[in-house]
Length: 482
Image 1 (cartoon, rainbow, N blue to C red):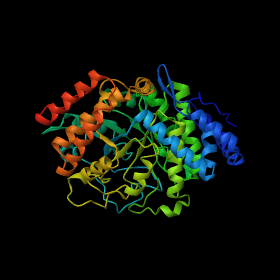
Image 2 (tube, rainbow, N blue to C red; image 1 turned 180 degrees about the horizontal axis):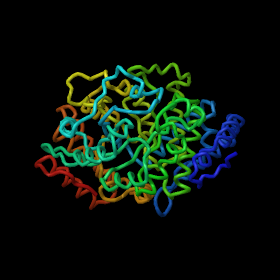
Image 3 (cartoon, one colour; image 1 turned 90 degrees about the vertical axis):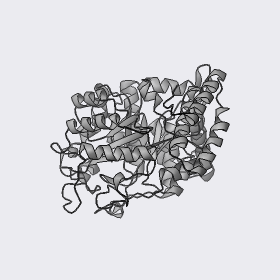
Image 4 (cartoon, rainbow, N blue to C red; image 1 turned 60 degrees about the horizontal axis):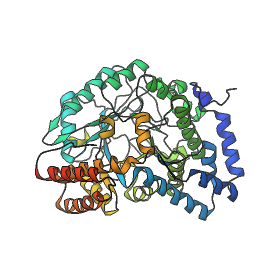
């Protein structure tokens, strides 16, 4: 029997089944232990130090106690703390991105994904470089500055050379004032050598969802194809780190397995990265199973209510205070509005989850990976965020200034968000407003920028940011950053 060891590089030791079961038992036994719950919440509270703001975070076991707790007033305490932590490290900024689907050819048999190899009626597509160019221009014309590229796993249709060529094409396109400044990559687990190639290509974050940490369920959900190898998939982030990629993004597909198991496994994976490499995940995503071409989410029988989903997000924020959290257009406007207050720091906007979808006037449904619940335009999303008091951010500065991995975490922990990320967000919002926004969004947005500039504590930084915003408004000067 495997022994739990967060420093191990063996999947079944750092994601240990017996440890997860024991954690769930412990949490159930203590879910009404008010004294313990208060101690856990107090441990997680942000504290000012000489070096900035510090949060202790929580272990997977402590966080699981919070997740199990069903005392209404304690849940409200969790939500208040989650909001406090999010504001302490990420402020009121919300980073925007879009997925770009390159190919839906896939040789895996994943039973929850319409791209599975046995689906013979889905339209199979793969973008040429000219088609990539057209998709990117369409995204630039919306105002997007960062993409997450997606592709099915297929050794001949989607080899690493194809992915690298697409990345190069994306970075090379400058249309009017548009430019994609950061390409995150969400492709199948691969080799150390290929991760090195991705790093050399200038990717931002390497994202790979575990789908489920429950090995027995994992093997059933992935009956055929390379993804069937649980250990190879689960150990992918170790190989990515070895290949030089220090910004990695974790996630599970909630609804495939019982949520308490997935929650503990997800935090154990984050703890493993911290223990083995000195830096936790750059992001954690929280997708839920959604309807798609031949996929009925109800068959998985582990669906989450919105209330439980919100609680999971709050508990992840408390447990992993320095990690960015992502929610996609899988979720409705109403759900996204609630969880923005509980720890989410990145959202997608105006997403098309089909190959070639951005150049189509009507949203294609015959090749979507999942149904999109929030179908608003990017301008509508930006306008909505402003109305809610958030700063829509298109910033990519940290990645391009080499502030990745532990260097980003140091910035986050030092409390320099207001002197760095905050002005960067305002300047990139000014770019969006000047180049792409509707008149209503523009008016609201510049009023927000004027107010938020005054929150920059360092006078010299504030003055530079103010000058840069004016230069953006009055000329074609772009891409200022701290």
